[in-house]
Amino acid sequence: MGGDPLMLARVQFALTAGTHFLFVALTLGLATLVALTQTRATVSGSAVHARMVRFWGQLYVINYAVGIVTGLVMEFQFGLNWSGLSRVSGSVFGAPLALETITAFFVESTFLGLWIFGWDRLNRWVHLALIWVVTLTAYLSAYFVLVANGWLQRPVGFEMVDGTARLTDAGALLTNPTAVLAFFHVLFGGLLTAGFFMAGVSGFHLLRRTAEVEFFRRSMRIGLLTVIVSVMPVVVFGGMQFRYTQPTKTGGDRAAAAVADFTARFGPGEYLAPSTAHVAEGLMVSMWSLMVLVAMVALVKFPFGRWLVRGRVFHVLMIAAVPLPYVAMIAGWVFREVGRQPWMVYGVLKTEDALSPGVGAGTVAVSFAAFAVLFAALFAVNAWLLARFARRGPEGAGLGAAPPVEPAAPALSPTF
Image (cartoon, rainbow, N blue to C red; front, top):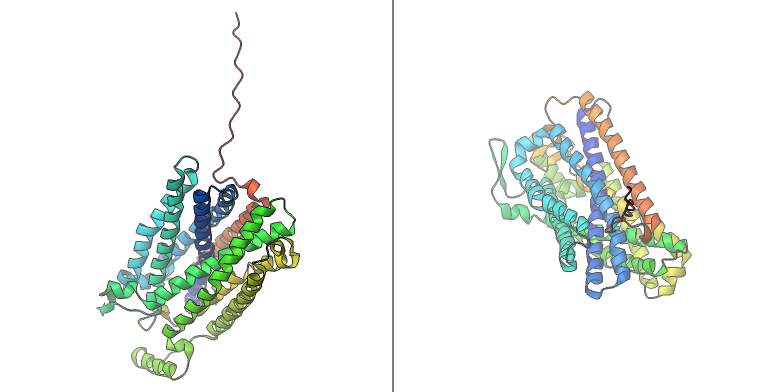
């Protein structure tokens, strides 16, 4: 890999996109759970649910803020290394990304700021509406990104004019099954990630015999219910995508026919999916199987509230299960992206042709080293902040807290 700029650029993209995806999943899931919890608190006036909004909302904001930085770096490396993709397919691939930035990301960030700083300053129903706008625009943002990625996987709604892709059917682009099914797969995957995260943090505090028993008992129930409800839709929508999987990934007669077609059109080459993709597929399936087993245990435990509080082995299990959805997501992402090779746009643009001209191994190696250090630091900072504020418990939540009032200075006695 050391002297190959193409491989270095691919590994750099894997680092940036894969790391950013880990932040996105927890952000999507936690935003939904915070919005649902705030709805309960607003409607019922429950004090414990109001405290839960502040505690879990603070962890959501931390993850969101650090994740934004990883997303900006990921966009930067697109222009740095993959100008060929923009040159050939920018008018199609770039359209949903522009929509994501203009109509989703800016709205999401603006309303999140209002939600954070509008605590106890806005009407409670207005404040509740803000977090729902944040959540829905986060979904919209994820959808547009997956529309762009879905087009790379299964290009539709376009025609080639003088070597450049031109959009001819926006409806086909926006309803591409590889995007729509992936969106619901990611949506429930985010909920599953947040459910395991909430159950794991709650298990940590219950294992320590926290004084906030009722707080974390309720949080544990929400996390477990989310896991139970989400785990099967994740599997279902993941399985439905195999109908649209590239034949060069699945093998068999369709793969042989695809290889023959590509050879005739583009010349000889290695058109079958690399073995790395199949290893990742096996790891993904294994992780989902483990999560289904954990969900079954949770389903048995769920009706018995005392076991949620006293079951120390169960608490350890939930803490240990927190990484499972993350491993599954990375493995699934590797299967989806690496399995598309050697194509950047399947059957249209090869990855080697999408690389920016004139990019040498030295340039990519320097940027790769810089990005690797930056992303390692961001990941470590995010993990440290989440662990720190999660360990503090609800009493340490500063989100929405009123600023301390400075004591008034004593009045000076007049002197004559």
